[in-house]
Image (cartoon, rainbow, N blue to C red; front, side):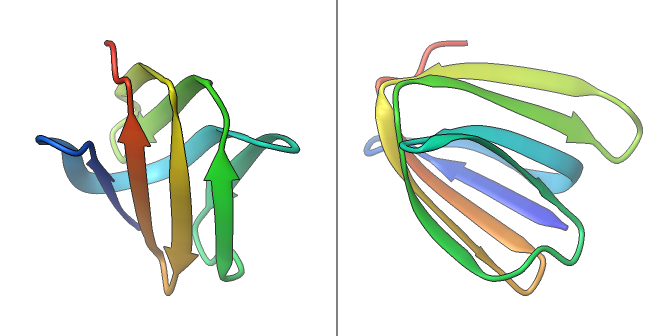
Length: 82
């Protein structure tokens, strides 16, 4: 599945991934391949990403929004720190 992470001033990440874990406002959630469509507000916390080859990335965010549709994940975030 394809992940795109955007902040107001830059593209943070774009690539194929196995899983994404994000801090939803009602608790942490994980997105895997063929996940149901979803729109969620994001709370401050960490985004954890596992790439197709097992690579791992993590970013602290101040909040934002997530959209999942047809194996595409878009995270629009603010206050990003590696």
